[in-house]
Length: 373
Image (tube, rainbow, N blue to C red):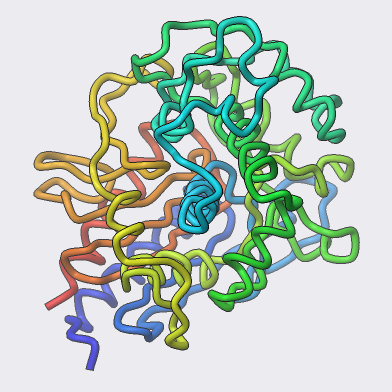
């Protein structure tokens, strides 16, 4: 019914399980969807209990995971929804909806610049002060007072600034709280109640911990992201903080359904239209490409998404131009493929490095796509 090579898909299940057995990640989930159906659903390992002193908590299908930057794709779609309502123009300066953003020479920076990591505003000092993130007023003030650290235009991945800037753009344009707009415009219509940023007190025990397993510190630009992995997922004070650039909390089934909604042209699995097909095409198609000065790697971007290319990418070694998605830290990838109409979420809680992310995820992404007939 869904046109899949079952044996090839079984090989991807076995590969995912073998990665866990070899200690590449403590626990994880793998969900694949196609044509409105779940065709693979795997949960394995420990969500908590990998470190001494933690009570073991096995991973189940409903275990929530910290997905870090995978949430940037969700933020991008909220921008798209605001734009569809005529409340925002991605090509216009941010200052059109947020006048104070223009301070200190930021008046020409557009929403599109930030969506494609070309805004040049990297707030390294504020990124290193998580104790200040809980109060949104602190975030807004810090962004307004920030000075461009780099020239607008060149690619420089914005680890946290992407979310802070665009979440406030959403709030200014819609007049709604960011989380309320997420629930009203996206999570509700798409039937994705577990699509959330931060988690309420009564649900914290159901969220897996993230673990940094690498031997060396990892930096993106001048921000040491490896230090943030366990702080963001084990510190109770950080659990409810709104961190739109790196704070998505969900399960693999939810993330896969989000991507399937997009690859179906904005239509949810129950047939409800969430956004226009043309909007999906505009945001998930290629916008820019080149050498990213923050990650020291070549990247190809849509509007808030990492998209495929003619050559090697995270999604495979051969032509992946139909693919779009986003990674979260070094542990998670959500993606879909316009060519095969497959959507998948590979979610784990083990983090080492960019190279390890690619080594683990590329064979899975490629094999999932190859299983489609």
